[in-house]
Image (cartoon, rainbow, N blue to C red; front, side):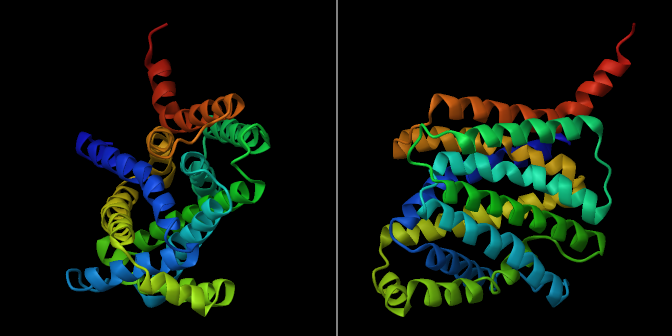
Length: 298
């Protein structure tokens, strides 16, 4: 990856890391489904004036939106409302790297090297340590499970993005903006049937500056800028190379959660965090390390 693209990846890491703090603030004001629906409605309303419609067929726009937007954030917002701490959510969501590798093999027939298999095993072990630890009573089993589901949805979105790019269609900001008209429909339907019409109306009439600021950050920085650059990287590099770059997101997320939300992480969960990061680092840099070793003179 060239230096310019590494700087773009760093911006994504910071924007998405602090994103979890903003999500927690947003869920203090809105229900999970309303936060998701309003987030993408804002993107669609604003973005359609500045970005042209993509050349991507409607079916692929819908697949992209349902996996990456509705699936990922529907599960993630629900997980956080069911007791998943923001800091740990930023780490567990990186299971997308594991799911992306698995889906890339199954659906795209990409090759996975032995060190990547080892990396997946290590990361899964770390997630198991985090999920099975009972010392941190703020994390619930359902919250942990829903966050894993969000990671798998993100991974499916990565695969759809790769397919769209391979077919020669737009996988850029145009796609992000115009596909944002899709997720508000399932989000608001879920809000109506799960939370009720009265709750939906209450969320709307009680919008305040904090809520509007939350929606602005989630829409502009986390979605338009973040996913625009993410799709750009996915279009230039293999999915197995790009997906693990987000291992820096939980570092920002965990640190920010301790500073702004006073969230605590148990000692055993810190062990799991280190194990997960080790697996993700091996997956990201393992090929480079092996090449360096093979080129070293005996």
